Length: 168
Image (cartoon, rainbow, N blue to C red; front, top):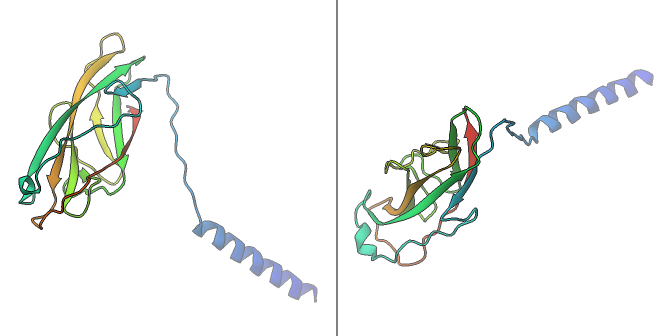
């Protein structure tokens, strides 16, 4: 009987450990001596409004329109490290480097230098603008991007990116 109970207990522990491994949540953080603060158009939680454009302006895959400027402000950067902005979001297309939108029209983020963001599985990174005494500013852009040649349907195009500062 004792052997049977020992065998059942061992089997139960094995099942418990297998079940625990399959349901995992990973958390990641970063400690640094540096701590920059970012604002976009003067806000830490901005809404960037793109212009209303005609669906015909995005007829072919790769067409862009509605380029909209917004400002990036950086303050309180201390220390010798180089800070980067990391953008992550939902509905990312790593093929076209776009986010949000729908199957036919997405949004494209352009960096301080005007180049389109290159989204990968872990996001898109931009070097912060040159800093003087720990502060600086720059310009970013967002625009509509035709993902396909399919007929575009009129309606709202929205997207959301989360951002974080990382140091190297």
